[in-house]
Length: 410
Image (cartoon, rainbow, N blue to C red):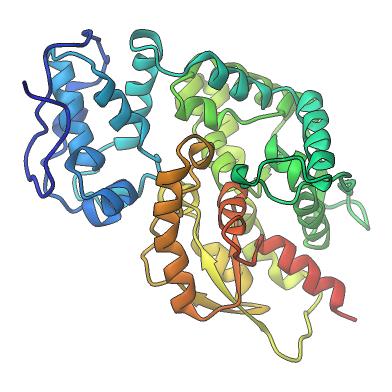
Protein backbone atom coordinates (compact mmCIF):
# COMPACT_ATOMS: atom_id res chain seq x y z
CA UNK A 1 0.00 0.00 0.00
CA UNK A 2 1.32 3.47 -0.86
CA UNK A 3 2.29 5.65 2.04
CA UNK A 4 2.83 9.34 2.70
CA UNK A 5 6.55 8.99 3.06
CA UNK A 6 8.89 10.05 0.30
CA UNK A 7 12.02 8.31 -0.82
CA UNK A 8 15.35 10.08 -0.44
CA UNK A 9 16.43 11.83 -3.60
CA UNK A 10 12.91 11.83 -5.08
CA UNK A 11 12.32 14.65 -7.56
CA UNK A 12 8.59 14.51 -8.12
CA UNK A 13 5.38 14.21 -6.14
CA UNK A 14 4.99 12.34 -2.89
CA UNK A 15 2.72 9.26 -2.96
CA UNK A 16 -0.23 9.46 -0.58
CA UNK A 17 -2.27 6.70 0.94
CA UNK A 18 -5.96 6.88 0.13
CA UNK A 19 -6.70 4.30 2.81
CA UNK A 20 -6.45 4.23 6.58
CA UNK A 21 -7.27 7.90 7.11
CA UNK A 22 -10.02 10.48 6.83
CA UNK A 23 -10.64 12.89 4.00
CA UNK A 24 -10.37 16.58 4.77
CA UNK A 25 -11.02 19.77 2.84
CA UNK A 26 -7.85 21.82 3.27
CA UNK A 27 -9.58 24.82 1.66
CA UNK A 28 -6.41 25.81 -0.20
CA UNK A 29 -6.29 28.02 -3.27
CA UNK A 30 -5.65 25.78 -6.28
CA UNK A 31 -3.78 28.52 -8.11
CA UNK A 32 -1.44 29.02 -5.15
CA UNK A 33 -0.77 25.28 -4.98
CA UNK A 34 -0.03 25.27 -8.71
CA UNK A 35 2.68 27.93 -8.42
CA UNK A 36 5.17 25.32 -7.18
CA UNK A 37 6.89 23.66 -10.15
CA UNK A 38 9.07 21.37 -7.98
CA UNK A 39 12.28 22.94 -9.28
CA UNK A 40 14.13 22.10 -6.07
CA UNK A 41 15.76 25.50 -5.52
CA UNK A 42 14.16 25.56 -2.07
CA UNK A 43 15.82 22.34 -0.90
CA UNK A 44 19.17 23.77 0.31
CA UNK A 45 17.26 26.40 2.30
CA UNK A 46 14.88 24.02 4.08
CA UNK A 47 16.27 23.02 7.50
CA UNK A 48 14.18 19.87 7.88
CA UNK A 49 15.14 18.60 4.43
CA UNK A 50 18.80 19.35 5.13
CA UNK A 51 18.83 17.14 8.23
CA UNK A 52 16.53 14.37 6.95
CA UNK A 53 17.10 14.16 3.20
CA UNK A 54 13.44 13.17 2.84
CA UNK A 55 11.26 14.68 0.12
CA UNK A 56 8.27 14.79 2.46
CA UNK A 57 10.32 17.04 4.74
CA UNK A 58 10.87 19.63 2.00
CA UNK A 59 8.64 22.52 0.86
CA UNK A 60 7.90 20.97 -2.53
CA UNK A 61 7.26 17.60 -0.89
CA UNK A 62 4.81 19.10 1.55
CA UNK A 63 3.06 20.97 -1.26
CA UNK A 64 2.80 17.71 -3.22
CA UNK A 65 1.12 16.15 -0.19
CA UNK A 66 -1.28 19.09 0.07
CA UNK A 67 -2.21 18.66 -3.60
CA UNK A 68 -2.96 14.96 -3.15
CA UNK A 69 -5.19 15.64 -0.14
CA UNK A 70 -6.89 18.46 -2.03
CA UNK A 71 -7.70 15.90 -4.75
CA UNK A 72 -9.37 13.62 -2.21
CA UNK A 73 -6.59 11.51 -0.73
CA UNK A 74 -6.95 10.63 2.92
CA UNK A 75 -5.31 12.36 5.85
CA UNK A 76 -3.05 9.98 7.75
CA UNK A 77 -0.82 10.30 10.78
CA UNK A 78 2.20 10.52 8.50
CA UNK A 79 0.69 13.45 6.60
CA UNK A 80 0.04 15.25 9.88
CA UNK A 81 3.61 14.58 11.01
CA UNK A 82 5.09 15.99 7.79
CA UNK A 83 3.06 19.17 8.25
CA UNK A 84 3.82 19.44 11.96
CA UNK A 85 7.56 18.96 11.41
CA UNK A 86 7.82 22.15 9.32
CA UNK A 87 9.55 24.89 11.35
CA UNK A 88 7.83 27.56 9.22
CA UNK A 89 11.08 29.46 8.81
CA UNK A 90 9.96 30.64 5.33
CA UNK A 91 13.50 30.33 3.98
CA UNK A 92 11.99 28.57 0.97
CA UNK A 93 10.06 31.74 0.07
CA UNK A 94 13.26 33.78 -0.18
CA UNK A 95 14.79 31.16 -2.47
CA UNK A 96 11.70 30.51 -4.62
CA UNK A 97 11.73 32.10 -8.11
CA UNK A 98 7.97 31.52 -8.47
CA UNK A 99 6.99 33.31 -5.22
CA UNK A 100 5.12 30.30 -3.86
CA UNK A 101 3.23 31.49 -0.71
CA UNK A 102 4.40 28.51 1.32
CA UNK A 103 3.84 30.12 4.72
CA UNK A 104 0.22 30.88 3.89
CA UNK A 105 -0.38 27.37 2.54
CA UNK A 106 1.13 25.81 5.68
CA UNK A 107 -0.89 27.98 8.05
CA UNK A 108 -4.13 27.18 6.19
CA UNK A 109 -3.30 23.47 6.13
CA UNK A 110 -2.70 23.41 9.86
CA UNK A 111 -5.91 25.36 10.46
CA UNK A 112 -7.84 22.69 8.55
CA UNK A 113 -6.04 19.95 10.46
CA UNK A 114 -7.07 21.46 13.79
CA UNK A 115 -10.74 20.86 13.02
CA UNK A 116 -10.49 17.73 10.90
CA UNK A 117 -7.45 15.70 11.95
CA UNK A 118 -7.36 16.07 15.74
CA UNK A 119 -4.33 18.31 15.38
CA UNK A 120 -3.19 20.38 18.42
CA UNK A 121 -4.27 18.40 21.50
CA UNK A 122 -5.75 20.14 24.52
CA UNK A 123 -2.46 20.47 26.39
CA UNK A 124 -0.91 22.35 23.48
CA UNK A 125 -3.91 24.66 23.15
CA UNK A 126 -3.79 25.48 26.85
CA UNK A 127 -0.10 26.29 26.53
CA UNK A 128 -0.73 28.71 23.68
CA UNK A 129 -3.59 30.37 25.58
CA UNK A 130 -1.35 30.83 28.61
CA UNK A 131 0.70 33.28 26.54
CA UNK A 132 -2.28 35.63 26.47
CA UNK A 133 -2.58 35.63 30.29
CA UNK A 134 0.33 37.82 31.46
CA UNK A 135 -0.28 37.57 35.21
CA UNK A 136 -0.49 33.78 35.14
CA UNK A 137 2.56 33.60 32.88
CA UNK A 138 4.58 35.84 35.18
CA UNK A 139 3.55 33.85 38.26
CA UNK A 140 4.43 30.52 36.68
CA UNK A 141 7.71 31.96 35.39
CA UNK A 142 8.63 33.16 38.89
CA UNK A 143 7.82 29.74 40.35
CA UNK A 144 9.88 28.07 37.62
CA UNK A 145 12.78 30.44 38.35
CA UNK A 146 12.64 29.50 42.03
CA UNK A 147 12.50 25.80 41.19
CA UNK A 148 15.45 26.32 38.87
CA UNK A 149 17.49 27.84 41.70
CA UNK A 150 16.65 24.83 43.87
CA UNK A 151 17.64 22.39 41.14
CA UNK A 152 14.12 21.01 40.76
CA UNK A 153 13.61 21.64 37.04
CA UNK A 154 14.60 18.79 34.69
CA UNK A 155 17.62 19.77 32.58
CA UNK A 156 16.04 18.20 29.50
CA UNK A 157 13.66 21.18 29.35
CA UNK A 158 16.63 23.30 28.21
CA UNK A 159 15.17 26.40 29.84
CA UNK A 160 17.32 29.54 30.08
CA UNK A 161 18.31 31.11 33.39
CA UNK A 162 14.90 32.50 34.37
CA UNK A 163 14.74 35.84 36.23
CA UNK A 164 13.27 36.02 39.73
CA UNK A 165 12.68 39.75 39.29
CA UNK A 166 11.89 41.87 36.27
CA UNK A 167 13.35 45.29 35.61
CA UNK A 168 11.13 48.33 35.14
CA UNK A 169 10.94 49.65 31.59
CA UNK A 170 11.62 53.41 31.61
CA UNK A 171 8.82 55.43 29.99
CA UNK A 172 8.90 58.76 28.19
CA UNK A 173 12.24 60.36 27.36
CA UNK A 174 14.91 62.21 29.35
CA UNK A 175 14.06 65.58 27.81
CA UNK A 176 10.43 65.14 26.78
CA UNK A 177 8.96 66.25 23.51
CA UNK A 178 10.35 63.34 21.49
CA UNK A 179 8.50 61.26 18.92
CA UNK A 180 5.88 59.16 20.72
CA UNK A 181 6.34 55.45 20.00
CA UNK A 182 4.81 52.27 21.36
CA UNK A 183 7.17 49.52 22.52
CA UNK A 184 5.50 46.14 22.09
CA UNK A 185 6.51 43.90 25.01
CA UNK A 186 4.73 40.60 24.25
CA UNK A 187 4.55 37.47 26.39
CA UNK A 188 7.57 35.20 26.90
CA UNK A 189 10.04 37.95 26.13
CA UNK A 190 8.49 40.23 28.74
CA UNK A 191 8.41 37.44 31.32
CA UNK A 192 11.89 36.02 30.67
CA UNK A 193 13.86 38.77 28.92
CA UNK A 194 12.52 42.01 30.41
CA UNK A 195 16.07 43.40 30.59
CA UNK A 196 16.09 43.58 26.78
CA UNK A 197 12.98 45.77 26.90
CA UNK A 198 14.73 47.98 29.47
CA UNK A 199 17.74 48.30 27.14
CA UNK A 200 15.50 48.98 24.15
CA UNK A 201 13.53 51.71 25.92
CA UNK A 202 16.74 53.47 27.01
CA UNK A 203 18.12 53.44 23.48
CA UNK A 204 14.81 54.67 22.02
CA UNK A 205 14.80 57.60 24.46
CA UNK A 206 18.39 58.54 23.60
CA UNK A 207 17.47 58.42 19.90
CA UNK A 208 14.65 60.92 20.35
CA UNK A 209 11.70 58.66 21.04
CA UNK A 210 9.18 58.92 23.87
CA UNK A 211 8.34 55.40 25.01
CA UNK A 212 4.78 54.23 25.66
CA UNK A 213 3.85 50.72 26.83
CA UNK A 214 0.62 49.04 25.69
CA UNK A 215 -0.33 47.32 28.94
CA UNK A 216 -1.65 43.78 29.58
CA UNK A 217 -4.16 43.67 26.72
CA UNK A 218 -1.24 43.42 24.29
CA UNK A 219 -0.03 40.34 26.14
CA UNK A 220 0.74 38.23 23.08
CA UNK A 221 0.95 38.90 19.34
CA UNK A 222 -0.62 35.54 18.43
CA UNK A 223 2.31 34.32 16.31
CA UNK A 224 2.50 30.88 17.92
CA UNK A 225 -1.26 30.43 17.68
CA UNK A 226 -1.41 31.21 13.96
CA UNK A 227 1.58 28.92 13.28
CA UNK A 228 -0.25 26.15 15.15
CA UNK A 229 -3.39 26.55 13.03
CA UNK A 230 -5.35 28.14 15.89
CA UNK A 231 -6.55 31.03 13.78
CA UNK A 232 -9.45 31.93 16.04
CA UNK A 233 -7.16 32.32 19.05
CA UNK A 234 -4.73 34.38 16.97
CA UNK A 235 -7.50 36.73 15.87
CA UNK A 236 -8.63 37.30 19.45
CA UNK A 237 -5.09 38.14 20.53
CA UNK A 238 -4.64 40.41 17.51
CA UNK A 239 -7.79 42.40 18.26
CA UNK A 240 -6.71 42.85 21.88
CA UNK A 241 -3.27 44.01 20.78
CA UNK A 242 -4.69 46.49 18.27
CA UNK A 243 -7.01 47.91 20.93
CA UNK A 244 -4.06 48.39 23.33
CA UNK A 245 -2.06 50.60 20.95
CA UNK A 246 -4.46 53.14 19.41
CA UNK A 247 -3.58 56.23 17.47
CA UNK A 248 -0.99 56.79 14.77
CA UNK A 249 2.29 56.41 16.69
CA UNK A 250 4.83 53.89 15.35
CA UNK A 251 4.85 50.48 17.02
CA UNK A 252 8.41 49.31 17.62
CA UNK A 253 9.18 45.62 18.07
CA UNK A 254 12.45 44.07 19.23
CA UNK A 255 11.34 40.46 18.64
CA UNK A 256 11.51 39.30 15.01
CA UNK A 257 8.68 36.78 15.33
CA UNK A 258 6.35 39.25 17.01
CA UNK A 259 7.14 41.92 14.45
CA UNK A 260 6.29 39.59 11.58
CA UNK A 261 2.99 38.66 13.24
CA UNK A 262 1.99 42.28 13.91
CA UNK A 263 2.79 43.24 10.32
CA UNK A 264 0.44 40.47 9.14
CA UNK A 265 -2.64 41.66 11.05
CA UNK A 266 -3.97 43.24 7.88
CA UNK A 267 -4.16 39.78 6.31
CA UNK A 268 -5.30 38.02 9.50
CA UNK A 269 -8.12 40.41 10.43
CA UNK A 270 -8.72 41.71 6.89
CA UNK A 271 -10.13 45.12 7.85
CA UNK A 272 -8.93 48.62 6.94
CA UNK A 273 -8.11 49.33 10.60
CA UNK A 274 -5.98 46.17 10.82
CA UNK A 275 -4.16 47.11 7.62
CA UNK A 276 -3.50 50.59 9.01
CA UNK A 277 -2.24 49.07 12.26
CA UNK A 278 0.19 46.79 10.41
CA UNK A 279 1.63 49.74 8.49
CA UNK A 280 2.61 51.35 11.81
CA UNK A 281 4.71 48.36 12.88
CA UNK A 282 8.49 48.68 12.56
CA UNK A 283 11.32 46.46 13.61
CA UNK A 284 13.35 48.40 16.19
CA UNK A 285 16.50 48.28 14.05
CA UNK A 286 14.69 49.74 11.02
CA UNK A 287 13.51 52.64 13.17
CA UNK A 288 16.88 53.11 14.88
CA UNK A 289 19.31 52.82 11.93
CA UNK A 290 18.65 56.33 10.49
CA UNK A 291 18.76 57.79 14.02
CA UNK A 292 22.11 56.41 15.15
CA UNK A 293 23.72 59.85 14.78
CA UNK A 294 21.46 61.08 17.59
CA UNK A 295 23.05 58.70 20.08
CA UNK A 296 26.14 59.62 22.11
CA UNK A 297 29.30 58.50 20.33
CA UNK A 298 30.40 55.16 21.73
CA UNK A 299 34.02 54.82 22.78
CA UNK A 300 35.83 51.50 22.89
CA UNK A 301 39.52 50.68 22.85
CA UNK A 302 38.71 47.65 20.73
CA UNK A 303 35.26 47.19 19.15
CA UNK A 304 33.74 43.84 20.07
CA UNK A 305 33.62 41.18 17.36
CA UNK A 306 30.13 39.68 16.99
CA UNK A 307 28.54 37.20 14.62
CA UNK A 308 25.00 37.99 13.46
CA UNK A 309 22.40 35.25 13.56
CA UNK A 310 19.44 36.32 11.44
CA UNK A 311 16.08 35.21 12.88
CA UNK A 312 14.07 33.69 10.06
CA UNK A 313 11.09 36.00 10.55
CA UNK A 314 13.38 39.01 10.30
CA UNK A 315 15.29 37.83 7.22
CA UNK A 316 12.69 35.86 5.25
CA UNK A 317 9.37 37.41 6.32
CA UNK A 318 10.02 41.04 7.26
CA UNK A 319 13.11 41.27 5.00
CA UNK A 320 14.49 43.68 7.62
CA UNK A 321 17.77 42.01 8.60
CA UNK A 322 20.10 44.57 7.00
CA UNK A 323 19.28 47.39 9.46
CA UNK A 324 20.59 45.15 12.25
CA UNK A 325 23.99 45.37 10.58
CA UNK A 326 23.66 49.14 10.11
CA UNK A 327 23.13 49.55 13.84
CA UNK A 328 25.84 47.10 14.92
CA UNK A 329 28.51 48.32 12.51
CA UNK A 330 28.73 51.68 14.27
CA UNK A 331 30.06 50.18 17.49
CA UNK A 332 31.11 46.57 16.77
CA UNK A 333 32.90 44.46 14.17
CA UNK A 334 30.25 42.39 12.40
CA UNK A 335 31.07 38.86 11.24
CA UNK A 336 28.72 37.12 8.83
CA UNK A 337 27.87 33.44 9.17
CA UNK A 338 28.43 31.39 6.02
CA UNK A 339 25.12 29.47 6.08
CA UNK A 340 22.99 31.95 4.09
CA UNK A 341 20.62 32.54 6.97
CA UNK A 342 19.70 28.89 7.51
CA UNK A 343 17.23 28.41 10.38
CA UNK A 344 18.62 27.71 13.87
CA UNK A 345 15.79 25.31 14.74
CA UNK A 346 14.05 27.36 17.43
CA UNK A 347 10.79 28.01 15.57
CA UNK A 348 8.80 29.48 18.47
CA UNK A 349 7.50 26.44 20.34
CA UNK A 350 9.15 24.02 17.87
CA UNK A 351 12.23 23.40 20.01
CA UNK A 352 9.99 22.37 22.93
CA UNK A 353 7.56 20.25 20.92
CA UNK A 354 10.11 18.58 18.62
CA UNK A 355 13.42 18.82 20.50
CA UNK A 356 15.30 16.14 18.54
CA UNK A 357 14.65 17.78 15.17
CA UNK A 358 15.33 21.25 16.58
CA UNK A 359 18.66 20.11 18.00
CA UNK A 360 19.66 18.50 14.69
CA UNK A 361 18.92 21.73 12.81
CA UNK A 362 20.76 23.76 15.44
CA UNK A 363 23.94 21.71 14.92
CA UNK A 364 24.36 23.27 11.49
CA UNK A 365 24.03 26.75 12.97
CA UNK A 366 26.51 25.91 15.72
CA UNK A 367 29.00 24.72 13.11
CA UNK A 368 28.64 28.02 11.24
CA UNK A 369 29.20 29.95 14.46
CA UNK A 370 32.34 27.95 15.20
CA UNK A 371 33.65 28.62 11.69
CA UNK A 372 33.07 32.36 12.16
CA UNK A 373 35.55 32.51 15.04
CA UNK A 374 33.36 35.04 16.90
CA UNK A 375 33.10 34.63 20.66
CA UNK A 376 29.70 36.35 20.83
CA UNK A 377 26.54 36.04 18.74
CA UNK A 378 23.74 38.59 18.44
CA UNK A 379 20.18 37.60 17.65
CA UNK A 380 17.07 39.80 17.49
CA UNK A 381 14.58 37.11 18.48
CA UNK A 382 14.03 35.58 21.93
CA UNK A 383 13.34 32.05 20.67
CA UNK A 384 16.55 31.94 18.66
CA UNK A 385 18.57 33.41 21.53
CA UNK A 386 17.22 30.93 24.08
CA UNK A 387 17.69 27.97 21.73
CA UNK A 388 21.29 28.89 21.00
CA UNK A 389 22.05 29.72 24.64
CA UNK A 390 20.81 26.27 25.64
CA UNK A 391 23.65 24.87 23.51
CA UNK A 392 26.23 27.02 25.27
CA UNK A 393 26.42 29.92 22.82
CA UNK A 394 27.23 33.35 24.24
CA UNK A 395 24.28 35.18 22.67
CA UNK A 396 22.74 38.60 23.29
CA UNK A 397 20.24 40.95 21.70
CA UNK A 398 21.72 43.77 19.55
CA UNK A 399 19.96 46.39 21.70
CA UNK A 400 21.39 44.90 24.90
CA UNK A 401 24.84 45.17 23.36
CA UNK A 402 24.25 48.76 22.26
CA UNK A 403 22.82 49.81 25.64
CA UNK A 404 25.83 48.32 27.41
CA UNK A 405 28.19 50.16 25.11
CA UNK A 406 26.35 53.45 25.73
CA UNK A 407 26.54 52.91 29.49
CA UNK A 408 30.31 52.46 29.19
CA UNK A 409 30.69 55.71 27.25
CA UNK A 410 31.87 58.63 29.42
